[in-house]
Length: 137
Image 1 (cartoon, rainbow, N blue to C red):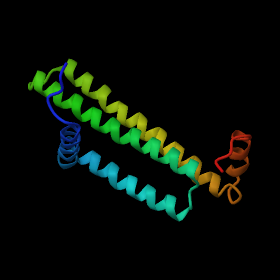
Image 2 (cartoon, rainbow, N blue to C red):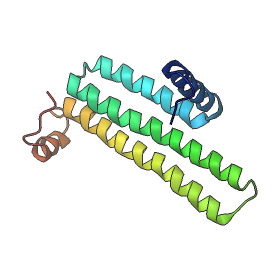
Image 3 (spheres, one colour):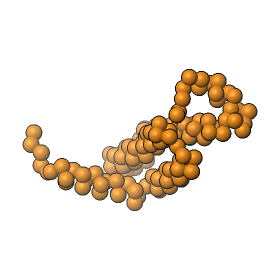
């Protein structure tokens, strides 16, 4: 199969798609703002490279999940613009992708945060015991 456009056009289309989602999806804007706050906290806490890797990976999963959810919702609206309970279930399941990704992303951030302050809180001994042998250094 012959490609109909250059790699530059492919990047252009991808950027346009991202800008459309960014413009039209309120939740993506919220997630990007939270991501920027997370970057700020990471900078203040002087995250190590492995911590940055974990934060960036978990954050990218949240953002990509939101984008996939948006695509699924648009496809479902295109297939059937009228209310349909089966399509509602599909959309709800799609939205749950984002919820699960956000939930685990928050847990990851809390683990990183609590490991920084484990000497202050009594939870620290639990964290140190739970993650014995796993170093984020």
